[in-house]
Length: 303
Length: 187
Image (cartoon, rainbow over all chains, first blue to last red):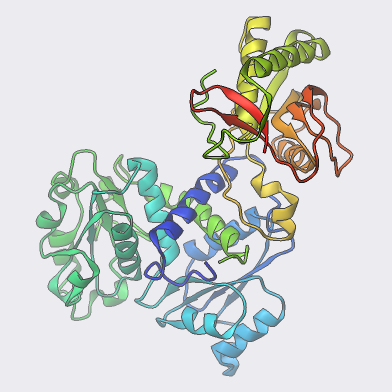
């Protein structure tokens, strides 16, 4: 693995290798001295051209726990505001002997474009509506922790499937690991031809959740709330929100994931988000371990 | 001597020259347990830390003996040193790390690192760095089943099961036979 650009490009064996390495990384975060010397003297540059707290901090902590130096670049205050092209900026960062570039951008395909232009491993930390591979890997890791294996598990992904890079990466990841994936949302949020990805589209929450082992609730993006996609927040919440009542449709031991940040009372009720079936905070903890594993494996330079 | 977790390093391993058989391993670990007690009277503040994975079955045997001798369980952990290896830090090979289990504090403890084979000394160097990340032990000692020589670092062994002269090119492995018995072989 030279870059981590998307789950779509990964084989099942490559996914499992990241998950296996994450097991060891998780233990490091539980120590009093949360640091190993593995990436001593390496430099990880986080280029976050779209706002983010959780993912950027998670990558920064991951780099530091491996003893790498982590540098953060955001759009504001960068030379992009002087009309430097993205590719030129990336070449300059690489010329300062960066060992990994972690890239987030609101435009799909930016990490791929940069990967072709620099000789440094590139990690996609979310590109537009395309992919968010480390989120899918940490979701799969969290599920493996709770369920052992994803083989033949029924996983329902609910929300704005069309615009969600998490949904796309999760779909690729979960299906490659042998799960049965259903997707659900209002018709305006369901892309045509989604079946081609090997998932079952559902147009009601009831249909999606019946007998599910796992429910992945996607964040409803506020910026889309008053658009044409659905009439009102209340209506969305009533038809596709996860509450104690709708949770009961799934298996009794079903678990709930959410990539965060959560909109309490919109896609997920507080008493579900904070209760036993929720693995939302475990996802955040595991995110650091999974990103440590990704940085460790990519800096090896092997195929 | 059931060690279900010990994966065969050589899947078709019946070849090579066996230099230590199961009774030999039993005798060696029993003797090491006595020597550890002699050096650390009453096993006060003693803990065993196996180096993953070859050290684990050896530590299990030594721990069982110590337990019988002092009539209580001696705390034991398992340390994966992959992320501390100097070739991983410097050159960038990427072996799969495995979880470390250190269910106790090593502060003020007498830590006995346990491995199967002592060779260049680089593994023990890495293991000492790793142990020190868990606290400040009163002492660190090293027990190995086999010392095959060829040290590349100034590291000594405190407890040895058997010294076996080898050439640098040979490989010395602790492995489980099909019937579950452990043996050490040169391959």
